[in-house]
Image (cartoon, rainbow over all chains, first blue to last red):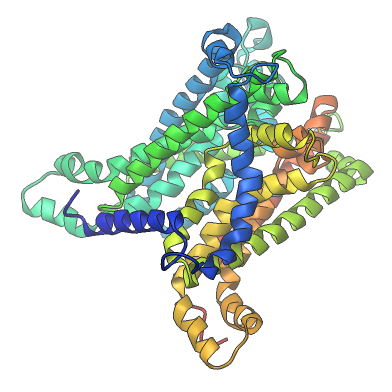
Length: 311
Length: 260
């Protein structure tokens, strides 16, 4: 990593900015840098509506009902079966849709960018992915209920063709797998959106160099293209994981509280103290913040590795 | 890779089916309100329901307020950072990415716990809702404005304007803003699309909006909610489509300056 000027520059600017934020005064003492006033409104807003609420969650996670310091809430979320189940459901749905969305999204991006498609198709696909990755929430849930719900299009087709009653067979889409299919709708367009430029960034020279050295197409992918793309593939999949983990509206509109995700549980806790302990809700939310932070660090790390080759 | 690849087409077709089948299904479903025939009855019912317009109107109002506050916060800050405090840019960028770390549900939870009890009571006014939406819009708004600013030479333009005796108002209105028009419009359309369909904040903070309304009648009625899902999709499609069309060719890579 030491011989990468871009990276070093980034690290340098980071360090400098840290120094800058630690001592805003340009020359020592009494000479306040007035330029800082220009960003004050933004920082005040972020403090009031982003950092203080998040920080209060952290603090309250360690508070008992009477306000005293305790580890009880943290221990509770690690031992109480309802909460463990919720985390399990949220984690599995996130893993399933991150891997599935990442895989199909990559294939689709590859097909559109490098599959010899007409250029219009590719523009269309990228535009559509932009829309689809933002098409979440209530309307998305309705669309899938109309597709594979009890009176859905596919359900009716299957019933008409095979002359069976799917519902009587105990088949239900309101499960983790059903919800995963729904989530995939906004997951893999996101993968397409991020992978398309990355695939575009594969230089023709690299392939030519590989061919000149006698490499086959397989060897090119195995030893050149794939290693270059790997950080951005993994990084995007981490992003997809976080994307699914934090989703609430889609799951709520799709299955109500059939599937107890962590977000659904937190939502219920907001509407009424369903856990019978306000501190528990905070600890639940804290768990989410921690997992999401780990995701973002993982993503940022992969981003750095990506910027080495793909820009 | 000159010749069309059969596998590429196969994957594309699968993808297109997966993309369009749910849209087609919900559209088909919304047309079946009158038994035995396809009609736009559900849309007529939806459009004659006064509650639809009031909730839709509320969402429009929230979108307008969010866009105003977000622009007022992000544009001057981003400009100022580019001009005077370039070292702070990574910090600002990090803050604008926070909504990915703190999901909407978690942020709502924190906001309610913090501001629904004394000493600060904000729960009676839509401040928390708008604040939540503004936070949600940060990544999109900042990214759009930031790329726009990066594409122009903020320092040179500002210094040139200053040396010719322009005031700050003139600089912002006549130099910076025209260069940022595309970027700002992109940010506006994305924010609009996000706020119009938003469910989590509005529902949990109990404010009327299009998203919760759709969910509510979805639990009670059939056909009209599906019609609204179609309308909502068209709305998303229109705003994101406009965003992509506006940003086409120049999502900040080109300087619009000079001629204007």
